[in-house]
Image (tube, rainbow, N blue to C red):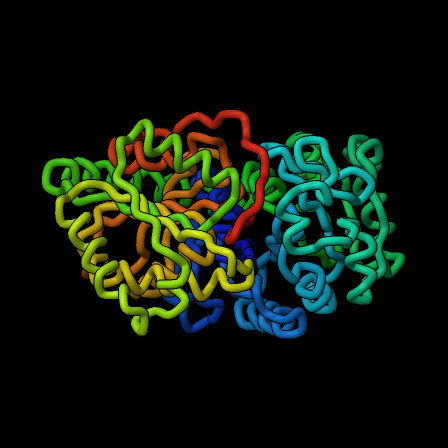
Length: 451
């Protein structure tokens, strides 16, 4: 058995897949969801970014279904990664997959980051999702009710509350099987703790009914934690390969410490309150230089009178081999829908200097995707998790510019206040074990948020 994760943005693909990498499975995140692009990757888990967050619902649904049809093979299970705060076209994408893959097990809770589900409604640190800045910015006046959102795209739903979930065992399996037999298309599962999600993972991975999972990184990591997920032989082979890979990485890290003192670039496209606190801690503790590019420059691109000057300024900062925090500014013309455009322009500013980098930290899925695309990196293999949802990877194919480049991706309104500092420290120290996670930070308003 293998796993295909279909996500609507790059940081979401990585934070959902990292649990499998941490469990010892070879895990690849790809910017293109096509069989031709992924044929060469002998991975246990593939997380494909369809980049559908900003598309119309109809186009997002079409692209998502096409990804599954292109990448489905016998024995491969499907996990549809959705944002834990229900951003994007998730309902339309689930509807497009349901007719192809069976009952949708919908469980977006991610307790490790403060997201839970009660009565089919998302709570963020115990408060209704509708009260958060992120929801108000993009869904003002709309209820964050999963049943209603799925009904809008034509799916019938059933509810599994926490008490029923916690029965576990055969009773739980029988409940889910009965829902599947009834013809219901989506089962919405409440969850308040990681143990709740583990119970759901244990039950559903053993069932014979046609089903697929719909969730954030929370349920995915519980599925990844199950022993013998891909069979005993596969698990043994994976463990052996993982050990060899760790030895190789340690050797490379030692060589890189001795020979490479190239700078780390931190790209921040998110304007969330969470990202602001993370940047402040990074500046304070790492003593890092910071540049904030005016959005007007990014909107006009090379046509802007100051474009060349900004490109030179970034190059001069990196030429000193000092680390740099590069951010997208905000003005009165701010529009969340322009995130991809601004991110692409920011990547274009950095592209001439990419070869100088020793490490890259990208906050916001659109920011990460734009930078990797500009650098010609089509996929990354995940290595480690710094804290919940903050993943480290490396280019799968040898990158002529930076063959040992380490890449950290993180969603915008996501992570603890010290997430960026922990990522920066990881890239400099390359610890053998991930940094221990701390209590999650609250969600805020973001330009490129995902979880």
